[in-house]
Structures are given as structure tokens and as C-alpha cells.
Length: 170
Length: 190
Image (cartoon, rainbow over all chains, first blue to last red; front, side, top):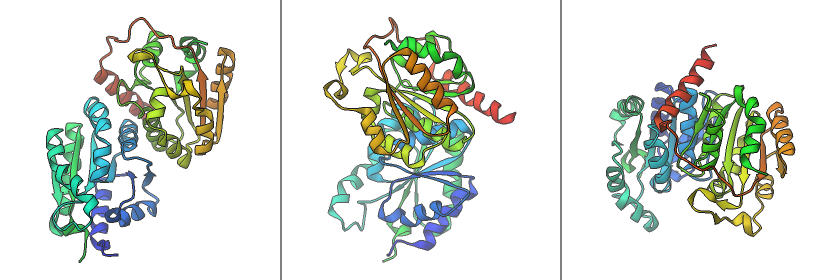
């Protein structure tokens, strides 16, 4: 499997360093190591969802409980979460740390991912969601820490796009 | 059976719970009985009240959490039943007021009016304790039993499609949200 285990661990350790203790997820190829790491970690509650939008509610509940959380999803899962993001997270000022695998971008070979790739960044901008990229080993830890800090201080969703350069070993 | 009478019958028992409601009539009627800092009204995002209750219950396993859901909201997020059943928090009580109607937006009939059985769906999703109640007495017994029990419970309460005269209150969404979180943090401090 050419999904990078090394870089998945790097991301996971950075999340743990931010005191993330609940992770919601829906499986997708690039996320498989991250989800397994969360599943095997007794310090982290993994919530396997039926649909990504549920994760907005789960993370809101965690926030009310004083627990820091992260959401793992594909960009199509982000598309499926938009009403929850707008009418819960934005409306009620709920911090969300969204790690979104950026499928359908440069290098994508699966035709079915490409339309979602086209609209991911335009939609993040339209929704006013601050976002950045996880695209190199050197900056992963810092970007995750910065995204988590901004999400908590601004009480809003913040997105990190997981890129092919980081996640895939070809 | 009126939803307001159901809520009134268990109102005193809610004092030690964290309460999450859906929007519209459920939120307005619970608030009309007297707002408390442990009540959170999710005034939009239909379907996510149960997910919010799940997040709370997973993070605060010793805390009783009760969700007041509705047929229209639950039908928008049936997957939530399977997610709750997967983790089955022992102190989460999920009440679904089923008036077979999207009452707050004009009373359009939902699929429960044409035979969709939420109790059957909840049971088949794997919720360990499920019941349907049709009288206030039975509602009170079912909810208080579930609150004292140690299993995730979904209770379908068949109610009339009647709501309050007004839906808007003077409690702002953000005031409610910050008060709710602060209340939970104060509990953790004890």
C-alpha cells in the first residue's frame, strides 16, 4: 500500500502533541494508517461515522465536554458536512480541526475523485474557512499546531488539506 | 399525547442531566417550562442533536446525557442510530418525539406518517433498549427507567402535531452555547 505510514505517524503524533483526545473518521485510502493509529491508541477515542456530517455534532459535544477533537475525512466528506459546518459550527462558534484528504488534485488517477478536487478550495474560501496544506515533512507538526491554535482561539472550523506529496509514496 | 405534557412530566428529573434538544417546537416547549444552564438547544443543523449527545456521552461517560430528538430530524440522520449503537454509551438516553410531521415549518407529513417505524429502525441499528410510548404516564416511566438504567436507550414518543404559539425566545444561540459549556466545566471542577 503506497500510503505513507511514516508520514501518517508524523501527522498522528502532531495531533497527539496538540492534546487531541477524540478523532472522528470515515475511512478513505489515504487515511487508513491514521485511523488505525487512532483505533490502537488507548488515549484516544475513535468514532467511526456513517457520514462525515455526524462528526460536526460529535466534535461539538466533545468541545462542550472540554475535550479537543479532530475530524478525518476525504474532501467528499467535507462536501457532505457543509450544512453541519454552517448551521452548527459557524452558527454556534464551535472549533473544528478538519484534516481533509485532498483527492482529485494534481496526480489523481481516479476519475471519480476529480470533480470534488476541483471544488474543494473554492468551497473552503466561499465558507470563509481558514485552510492550509500538509505537504511536506518539515512543516507538518507546526501547521497542525497552528491550525489547532487558530481553531480554538477563533472558535471556528479550520481545515488542513492532506496532499498527495505527503500521503502517497509512488 | 402532547409533547409539552411529556416534557413537563420529566422536567424535574432533567436537573442532573446534560440535555440536548433539536430546533423548533421541542426547544421552545422545554424552554417554556424554564430554562436551565444544562439545556442546549440546537436551533438548526437538523439531525445532529443525537450526534452531539454521542460526543458528550463519549467524553463524559459518568454524566447522564439526554437528547430530545424528533422524527423529521432523525430521518435526516438515520446513520446516527448506527453510530450510537456502535459505541452504545451507557448513560445516553435518546428520546424521539414523533408527531409524523415537520411541524415547525408548516406541518408537512414525514415518512413516519406513511408507515416508517423508527422503533424498528433503532432496534435494527443495534440500539440495545428501544420502546415506543403513547401516553404521558408511560413516557414518564420509560424515560425515568432509562435515566436510571445502564444501557443506551431510544424511546419513540408518539405525540400530536401541536406546537407552541411562538418559537423565538430571548435566549441568544451563543449565550445558550457558552452557558452550556461553562456549566459542564463547572461540573468537572467538583
